[in-house]
Structure formats: structure tokens, C-alpha cells
Image (cartoon, rainbow over all chains, first blue to last red; front, side, top):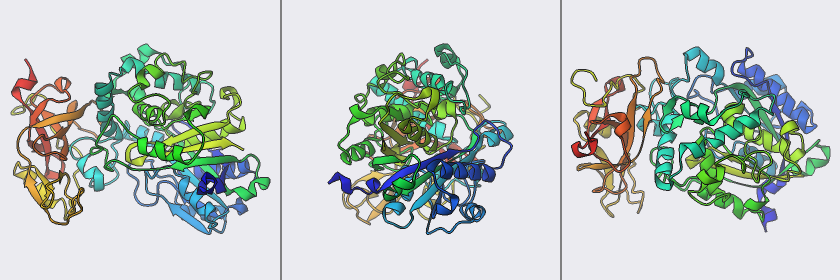
Length: 393
Length: 150
């Protein structure tokens, strides 16, 4: 019965990116148009074929400078297209292409584009440092009302207690978890679009300044400028597409309290989403050839390695130590584009999804995983968790 | 350490104040009086924070505010070193505190009474507040003396 799942009725047909960098002179709007045009061409389609359009996150005032890229209506106007489906998804809801997949699977749209544009690199430079989350607003609303006023002014401070608790419960060390950013940096050296490519050593990591304990500078992703667009198409259009990739399964389940401070068990994150993803496929962890796991922070990779069953709960430290398992050539190559830690904070798994598609097509250049057939992509974790399995056409 | 400040205490008035809602107004008002309010169910006794007006356990709408008393225990923490806003005083410890007498209640706040680097999981703390952004009083727990060490 698994063939009935809606995600089997869609493919990811195109991924496209603008230039990516610490600071680009182009506006977010122009970067968005670059990415959308590239994604549509990558799919083998024309812009006039696009009939669904989604921005992420949705409209309204962004929570940090440089966080929102381009408005939906202005982008549609620039493209000169007719849309039958539009969406501005609330930040954090699973993986951003789910809405497009649902719209295409239901027949509302045939070829839908979803884009994410950031100019956080420029904004951080302008502010003299990475600005407080929520600093664009006069007051902290919703769950942020219990985070920002006490001084948890960044997602770093909000997620750091998860790392503290995890290390307390399972005995993982910074020396072990350092291999996640170290390996990702080595992968970034093979990605000409990555923000940071120079080698990073364990001594560099251990000597780096603390941001919010136990997370140091290299445990935090890199604010960047850039835009990524993803095209989701109906599976029956495959003959018209250049190189589609299948969506084998996708899920986003919130099983804990939906606020960073209230999540009950901070040592275990993402399990309900991972379990739901596996329940929609006959594949298992041993079938995954390459993992694009969300890495806003190092600890988020830990969550997904364990929740998805690549290692047992509490075993991620030994699993990543030394880097061999998660490096190119290892059993589970991780974030082969450098991840957000070195490739740049393209956010919401847009960079991760683009890389998964490239790997499954054999278009990942010097960082290609040979014969990659199955890729896993995840987003954030906790109450913003999403996980999807993509497979070669 | 400034005049009148406890060990580990730094100014907390630079920041972003909360948007106060009909559900949370009583919490912020009580905070100004040095009292920590949470919510509990009159039907089944479950407790939680912040107030929602519905029992998270049995879904009863018969809920009430109550004052959290007694010592709390640190579930987890972080010591923030980054100056996220101009003028933000650092470093400071942020603690997630649970209360053995009130299962289900967890409150995020600052920690005083010990050096930030002395913060530990499971250490005991007393409820407290300090001046925060926008004239609000924010939770600022106080490390119990025997926990603070020499």
C-alpha cells in the first residue's frame, strides 16, 4: 500500500541556486530570480510551465535582518506567469517542499517552485555581528516571549541546552562531536560554491571562542547570502523532465512540546519524524548512500544520526569520532556540499535538498558519492522536524 | 560584578521585551512582585508553564494559576558569551529549571549566585527575578549556597 503515499505522485524535477557568498552585492530579489530561473532550466522546463509558487518562510516581518528574501507576488510578477497554487509556509514546518508536493499530488499545480532566499551574511556584517533573532521586532511574540526577554537572544542559546543535556546523559565529548564540522569543512573544499573551504583542524575547533556553551563558533552555521529554488513536478510529466528525482517518503511529526525551551527530552529529538518517514517506505537506514542532515548547529546532526537509526541513541559521539564513517568514502557520507556549517546557511534544508538531488543524478562533481541511489534529507529537529528520503529515478 | 549584584549577575535590561497577551499578563504582573506563576488543572492536578487555559493532560477547561514555590532543579543550561545586541552584558548563564514539587513545570531564566562556569545540571536553585528589558521583571534564579561551591 506504500505506493499510495502522496509523495510518490511527485518528483523533484529541478534545483537551482544563485551565487552564494558571505556578502553579495545583488538584492535578495535578484538572487531569487537567478535561483528560480536556474531551477526551472535545471528541470528542463520553461518559466511559463510553472503554475505553483511558494516562498519560505511566509510573508510578514522576518525575525532577523536578511531573513526574508523576496515577496511572492513580486516574484510572480517578475516571472510573468499564471499560478494556480501559492503558499507562504510558516517558518519551521517540516521540509519546505512538502506544501508543493501536496499541491502537485492533489493536482492543484503541475510544476511548483518553492524558494528560500537569505541575505543574513550581509545583515550580520551591517550589524557588526550576527544579530539577535527577533531584533527586527519591538516585542517577542509567541514562544519567543519566553526565550528572548531572559536573554536567549539567538537560536544558538535556545538549542545549546540540548547539547549540554545530550553530553550530560550520554557522555559525548566536544572532541568527538568536533568531527562533524571538521568533515563538513573537508567536503566544502570540494564544493566551489561553499563559503568556507580552508582546512579546519581539531585544534582550531577546540581553540575557537565559545558562543553559547557548549557550542563554539564552528558549531554554528555561517550566515550567508544566496537563494535556492526547488521545482516539484507531477510524476507523469517525467518524460518532459531533464533529470527527475523521486520522493520515496516524507514526514514531519511533532511529538514534544512545540517550543525550544519546553521540549521534554532534550537528549532525544526527531524520533517521531524519523519513525514516520521509515513507516512510509520499505527502505531502511542501511540503504542510504548519502545523508544531508540539517546542521544549523552540530548537535542537530547528532539528533538525526540517532533518530534515523544510523547509530543507537547516545552513540553519535563514537560514530562520528575520527570522521571516517561520515566522510566521502565512508559508510554514510554526510553533508557532502559542506552543510550549513561551511557551505553557508541557506536555511530550511534548501541547500541540503539541492545537494541530495545532485548526488542522486550523479552531478555532484568532485564530491560525488559513487552510484548514489538513496539520499536522506532532514530539516532542523524538535518541533520543526522534517525528514525525507529521495531516490534516483 | 557591579554594586548590589550577586555573583554571576550582570545587567539584563538590554534585550527584547515580551509581547504580553491576555493569557500571559498575570505571569508578567506577578513577576514584578517576585512571584512565579504557572497553571494547573483543577480536575486532574496536572501543571504546566506558560498558561494555556486548557489542561494539556485531560483537556479540562477548568484551570487556575498558582504560585511556584520551593526549590527548582536545573534540567539543562548554557552560558552565553555572544553580544547579540549592542550593550548586552556577557557572559551569563541561562538555565531551564524544573520543580520537584510541580512536575510538568519548566521555566527558562538566568542564573545568579554562582559564577556562570559553575552552573551544573541538577543543581538546586531558588526562584528569583531581576530587571529585564522594557521594564519587565524576568526569571533570574539564584543558586543555592551549598551548590555554589567555594
